[in-house]
Length: 111
Image 1: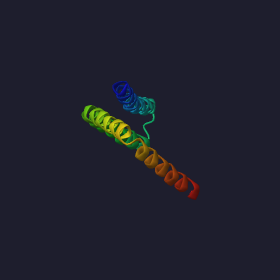
Image 2: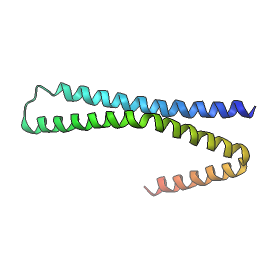
Image 3: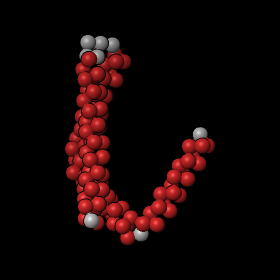
Image 4: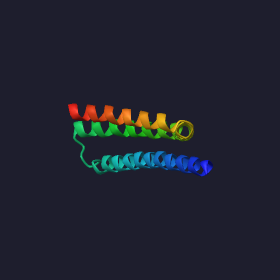
């Protein structure tokens, strides 16, 4: 029973990290399409912004490809650690969650 919960939590967190990476890739593709759509505008300011944006996108793509594997592994490790902690000390986990909820609520209320 514990193994099923652990596997379920890990696969759930993997799904979230995979979704985040997919969303970031989609955002980069949309930005690249937007930059290409403005290619007909040869105004100096727009051309320089477009060039800088393309350089930034290229760099972001390279960095994402380098970080994708380690990020996924870290997410798995964190999910397994959290799952293990919750199974070993469920009431402490509830207390931590309640404390974080209270803190977030107070921060939201201040703004």
